[in-house]
Length: 298
Length: 298
Image (tube, rainbow over all chains, first blue to last red):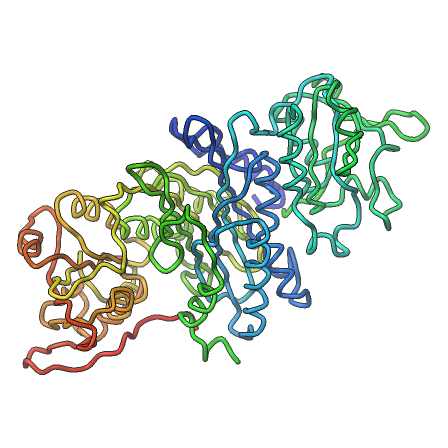
């Protein structure tokens, strides 16, 4: 059987079923980060992300932005769990044709962003590789009562997002700022029942929340915040690597969050019972059934 | 300037100089693992290793052994610091032409070894990639008084190794068992002043200990334990990916360690003042000056 038939998520599920974890693990694979027991008050978060030349970036992109992105995607995972990033290790596979100047720029991208977020780069590995590939593993911490998982959405929750959606491929995917401040603001002041970062596409990542929470949802198409150059709601719903936060909160929290002037939070829908599935309501008030579609590697 | 001129270790040093760490980091990059403060009694260890098709293995190698190796090299780093491995995340870049069967075998290799050492695989990332690449990040723990670093070698220390050296490329590099039991036995029963695992070559990795400890050393060529099929001491001294432990202990510990019947420990030399440099004594009792040579990626 080919990988394409199994699909990226089939493959991940296949691998997950093999994993056995002991009691020191609060939550293994299946969320934005692994959640490890740390002490009485805190969990440790652990995540990794690999970016590959020709898939996640090209050699025409600025090496500094590529290095920056390699770390930013992992910070976004820590943010989605409500935590703060602390320590990273960075593995780099470098083509022999890469120049020292480019390697320096790439490092500047990583270290620059690490400095901004107070992340310690504590180690790494450099290997020769025919294609440029960077893998960042990031440790973080979160107070136990501020941990956000994909599995906590409840019927009646309001579905919300940060920022706007669509056309990330045109530049945002290399330049986005992980929504760390927003996530910490939310978990400090409100009750957040579930959260994920949008890497595969708004629809697909909402699908991850719904699967893990055994819930359904309705989305109001007219409420989806579109990026300045984006005109198609369809595109916005499937656009990968937006790195915005998608979260659900009890109804009484939503209007206070949406009214917050400091950050850009929007209501886009509502959590329903699982039997409802995922549906959207268009501008003409017509329902349509939705599949969890978006970017997949296979 | 090209990467080749700077060299792998020049590049690592260049990156290391950019790294700033806060007081929660006991030891950042520059050793086999990063050492993070955990609690009163223990440090947390953090390491990553990337293996790349065409560099560290070929597609003709068994996918199971390749998966196994990806985790084993990181376990070896934890062993070299005297610790025990705990949690891993695994990033895999998979060619689209890879079959599901091969992917399953690769996963079996990783999970099989993880099971053997009680390691929790808590997460990962799967990406499309033109070449197969696997990066494992591993967390471990070590009691504070059992931490071994490269920097602790003292003049008069005896230089010792586990196992035998030479010809790893013929198979050992894919099948080795990380010397975890040996390392734990040593740090439980003896005073180990410095330790490293031999990934770049015995001479080069001894060089890492000498640089970090500001010391010199003399090696007795006749004492280097050779692998069954290895006849050349020169080859054994430069052979990479042997994944044996190289360590230094106070003189009074050495004979007791060498006499231990349970494991295979050998005396191979002695730590000298830095001004002595690194020299070896051949079978005719003649000194020769040595350079720290071995495998480099660039």
